[in-house]
Image (cartoon, helix red, strand yellow):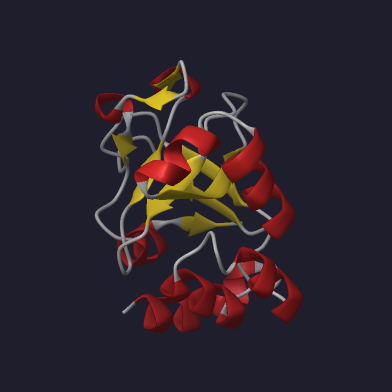
Length: 148
């Protein structure tokens, strides 16, 4: 399903596909399903939006898909990424609105998009109750997102 939606919206994304070298760098951090989708669709740098009326958190989404370097940096050097990765969340997007709260998917096939506020990570631990679920699957997110 994710592959179909990304193929349908490929021309709108205005990003870059994942290079073989970057795919190799991310192999131990990202699930295969995510790497496969990213190799096919130009996600790197794509700007994605959800109106606050569509986002169940009521905040809205203004996100740019991370580069491989940004993803690795968030996952290993920054908070909440370094707390989220061991909990099964992979960073994929950075906030374009100024909060800096990154967006993540979990390891499960076509898992949902979540936002993890910086306040969710305290003392090296992640507070699961602070995780904000945006969509039930990445497919759903790409189906309803505005792309600019």
